[in-house]
Length: 87
Image (tube, rainbow, N blue to C red; front, side, top):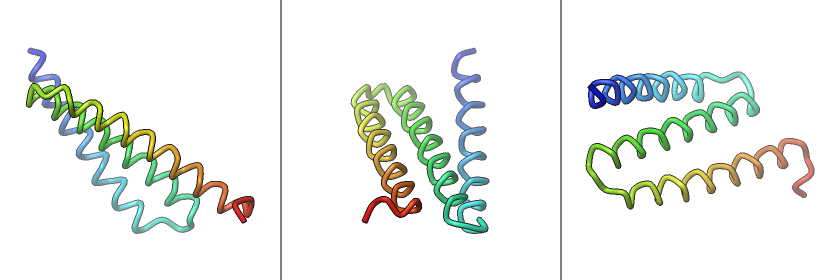
């Protein structure tokens, strides 16, 4: 039962990643692309966590945590740059 639910969650996360990728390339401005980039990284963190569960490799969760921290820093840097406070 749990594997069925996790498989459905994997498909839904993958669909959200694909739709966000479309919006990333189609987006009207840089702020919209930044938000979409954040959504894509959150989706990929979820996929890494699900892969860790299916592969029985807990070490992948450490990779997801580091990836989340780097993603957070990247979004903050981009936001500061867009507000012209970086330079």
